[in-house]
Amino acid sequence: MTNNNNNNIKDERLCIINPEDGSYSCPMANGYSARHSHDWSKNSPNVLTKRNLVEVRFKNGRKGIYENKEDLFLKDSDVVAVEATSGHDIGLVSLQGEIMAWQIKKYGITDKTKLPQIYRKARTSDIEKWQNAISRETEVLKRSKQIIEELSLKMKLGDVEFQGDGSKATFYYISEARVDFRELIKILAVEFKIRIEMRQIGARQESAKIGGLGTCGRELCCISWKREFESVTTNSARHQEMSLNPTKLAGQCCKLKCCLNYELKAYKEARQNFPDTSIILKTKGGDAFFQKSDVFKKMLWYSLDPDNSINITALTVERVEEIIEMNKNNILPETLLQNNLELADRINSKHNVKITSDEIKETSLPLKPKKKPNNKRRRNNKNFKNNNKKRPNNNNSNNQKNNGNNKNIQNTRNNGNNRNNNQRNKNPQQKKNNPKES
Image (cartoon, rainbow, N blue to C red):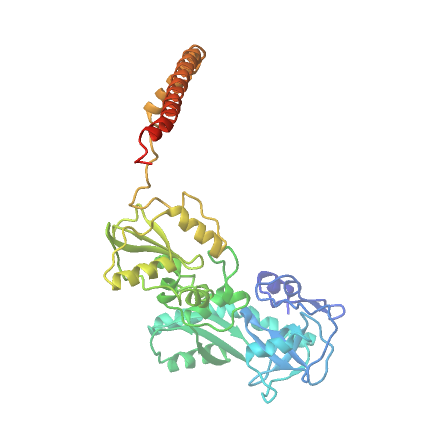
């Protein structure tokens, strides 16, 4: 093998062989890779499982779990020869040890599952055959696409992966309909002199092989950690009240983003106690229509205009249910809310959220206007102050009047007493003159 060919090809599987001692090194494998699996238990005590299992990584994130029956001493990024359907394949060690107890759960492996085994650490001859096979992949991919166009087959060829011993090549293709590629396999087998395997994949698997960055700025989930793909529908976006814009909801695979399902369960659980938003709330001021909602704050916004969200009113879930029950009993509330400040207090106390007065707009019922101060009272107060200044002179006159009144009262009392006394003095004489009456 010549080193010139290796320098022209950029592949994470390529290794550099030292011709003097036959040692090799894989610089791309030792560094960070999007398909690298982090071993968080690397520095913890090694607790071996019942079966000595090792995860081996191949091209474009393809991984498999193999059994180390020979108890080989392996470390990360070691190149190993593993069992294949026919012949052997070459891969890089990605994980081993205690963490494999969690990895086998992802793969759905049990104690009764038969696993392929690791033959040996790769020799120099194994690595040379492997890298010669890798160097052919780009040429085979280009030529295969030309043959597909000549045959007018409705299929898209995505990638080609050679087996480690160079005896087999797997062709990954995408097709919406069923394709008869028997003639294609014959042409490829004769031209490249290898065994051909055609494997159909979906658009999501293709993006996982190609790679790239998502709208979040991170590497695609299908590259870094996601192994199984679930169906994603537009209902996932509707439950989360996202705009049904295909350019925003679609990923690089032109399918709906897988991350739409990540928080879907949380939204469904939060919406279980929400009322039906299609119900119109009837008030004396008019009918209120649903505009938007905040699931985790348990808030609903309604407006009197179905096509316009101006002057919308924020309501709690309890208030909306209360109005619906009132409408069932043919009772119309005056407004959606009586006082927005009371609503803010209820929200802050129940849900521990801070809502400012700007977020809650005024309802259709205006608040009571403040009473204007009476000018008459102010004038009376001024007169009262002015009168207080003149009071010293008035007090003297009042005292004189009071003294005169008191003297008259005393005189009348004295006159009355004198009359009574005179009458008492006359009574004994009258008794003597009139003995019959006594």
